[in-house]
Image 1 (cartoon, rainbow, N blue to C red):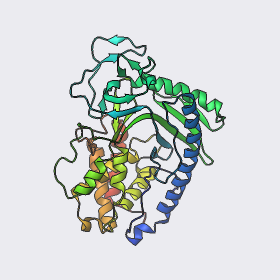
Image 2: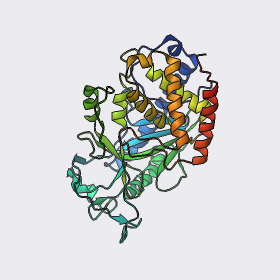
Image 3: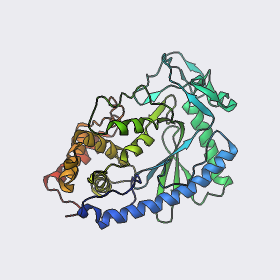
Image 4: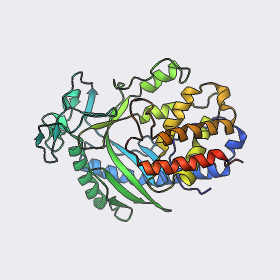
Length: 372
């Protein structure tokens, strides 16, 4: 196994079966990930601190703490960093929604392009009880609507200027991409990492109405954990021209915490599956499957198999997860754990998915695990 870094969520180490816990390949990979995350965090902290000086609506990323709250490692060289937006508080959902669309120059379109999907929503500045005057400016606000395209345009300009003004031209460069998504290439001491920088409105005070989670009473997670998860709220990400995308990164992190309090091997199954995905089943700098997809597979499997005894045998539990992943990839269908009507593979490259499905099928015919 190679020791390339990939998606990781840092949680307290729980007791796991000895064969899984002592895997040198997994431990080596974990160390490589931690090193890469720390280095990227330091660089992004400098960059966002400079951005915040130029425009106070964007908050600098902190490097304190061990949970990397604003950073997700999706693949060996693919990171996602959310940049919190400042000056929008007291969020409340609209009961009646009016969808409005604009050209990139702000001209209103008479006919709608398409309604938002489950993960998406429109946003008006009046949905916040308190808002800084800057959020009413024409650069981001059109007739009361907070338009993601405007926020992204402002942010991209700030990123370009800040790379030069804080002397990061030898470390960071703008990566060309589709649409208005802001991607930068970061040179670490060992390899190059592509980082997607996403402005985010953090809403820790409520749970979105679109999410009917949990759908019914389930043994996993328990009621106390459900209430804890929902208390962390959600985020709205500026990832497209018109719609803000709902994100549940804090809720996902809480679910991962204490995952193996019963002494099970859920987290180790996830770590090994992620490593196998990156090194064998779905390689490349922009894989069709990321650690986020694997996390959704883990949550659904934990819900279906909530008993401690279902997670006491590493090999059996791991193969159960892989079979679930194979089913989702083969059918091109993976439900979001918090928004069950959302298919996370809806826009994925079908040929790439079929290739991964074939590799998973071969593995399941004769499974050889890193611990074997």
